[in-house]
Image (tube, rainbow, N blue to C red; front, side, top):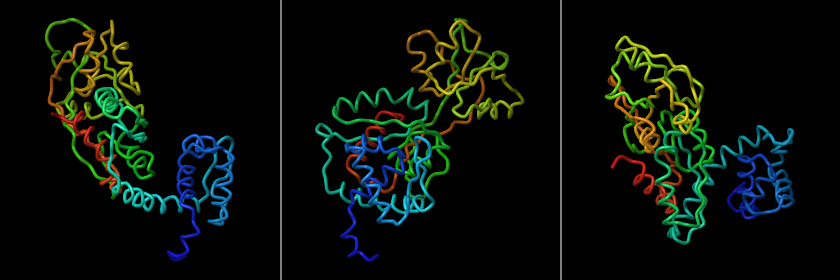
Length: 301
């Protein structure tokens, strides 16, 4: 197909195809694009004719993409990003009158400890926007960015798509949370002797803290692993349990006075909390506004 042949291609079909590949459900695509399910079905039929492939095959309540659909999606995504960015650059972003939907990926510690202040600021400046938060970590972030399911993410990150950009927000310091009222911080012996709660998205019972302890010939006993920070306050209350968490999450958990947040009794290797985003949206005015607010409210001041 040459570029003149593109005149017979409806761009709306490509937008709908991208939504179908992400949602894999006709009803959800209709809700997302504010069109009826019958319109989605008709568009899917046109897409199948255009690409000469079934594209999506029903499997129970979901729809599974064909290999050809996966190939098209992988090739189409970057092109759609470039087109979207080119159009967006031609517009000024007015947060006070915007109805944009922003899609963020946040690690649980960032969502719990840092996101509330950011959300309040976003709501005050842009009251009609919507924000969708996806749970992300260093394992999930690359896929979420590459698929376009999020435009920006905040987490500890390692490998990223080649087109992604990254900016450090802060070093991730740690604090030791406990519910008892014994004076002074814990000694190293006390820290190692107490039972530990660990927040682990993947269900692991050890992490970087254990590596730091091993370097000095010590260890701890993790007796409970939970997937989210929000439950720690209730879990630690009236127990000997302790939890070692990022400092910003510790501040949020201890703000009601029911928990103490003390420095760790040994040196801990600090990780970095970073903001990452799709390079194709680097100059999008709305996305740049969002990244500026993330930098303002989630970075070390």
